[in-house]
Image (cartoon, rainbow, N blue to C red):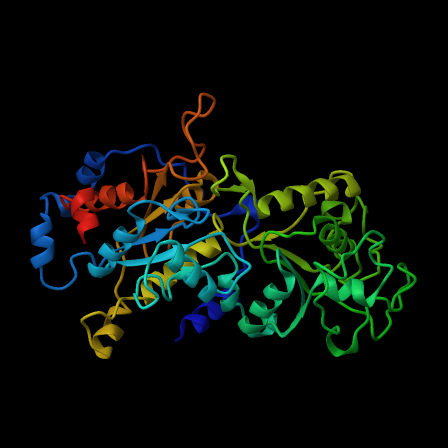
Length: 448
């Protein structure tokens, strides 16, 4: 079965994603700090050290049952500058035929565009097979959603809504609507400067001749046949026009069954769950990632999609007198996203030095351990610590100091504790390989 088919089948068998307050049914206590010696003591299979020369001369792939998952921003680069040694490190593990993926909460672009951007920032050649087919963005798991979901009408918002819609179309979402479509279809929807000639200049007609202005009485029980109904709201990545987006999302979440311009009679009903809010067939709200901040070249962390969510939650609480905003999350630390990445690692194996027949066999190779290397304890570290794949693979979290988290007088340790904290991504790989019993060093690794 194809990767997409596998994910679609899994989607049909389980809920799309756990609610954010239930990220995983098996809550684990955060791991404490552990030394390499402690890990070696636990893993009896690596009781004897392997020298770099032995690795080089060993038949087959000495690392066939381990893999790496790299965050990108703050781990491989900051802003436009690559982290020193990251390029050489990636070339080295690629040459050693080690499995890896890039698991980022970034989004708003096509995976191929992110591959090109990462390749350029790290100074790699486009011809090198180092980045290609390994990038998982915050919204990439939506590729695996079931076809019946993709046929529904969805509202998409993000940093560049039209670009997000084009990507969604490529994923299979054929009925995607943006806020720009709505304000061009209904001049009264947003009473402030609506930026129709700038940010929201790109639009398309609403699907099937539907209208955003068909309903004039929000409490009427008779719905006009051409009234627009939204089934799901997809916050694709960091929105730019928070005011418009929050207004439209609010309108849909208080609506009757997702019909734009209606108000549900169940809102505020204390006899119902959540006081009746979001209990009347309103569209599901999906947030592509929960990162409050992320790292650029600017010395102070920058707000991400999680900041937009917090603003939306604040407005929702004020409107509903404290009702809980119900939503679903993708991206790290969502276990749906980690499961998607794990499936990719299980199915993806380098074809260097092997025939198509050998590659097919390699696709079924199991994993014993995956090292998640990240800079954000709230997403990278938490997600890896709480992820328990059904096949028993162990995910180990490694925190680098080149990104979001920095030790301060007020915060000596991160809230979610990794297996180890290291200076940078090169040291992270060295620590992991040493944990696997290899006498690795920075100089050996960077020489390839």
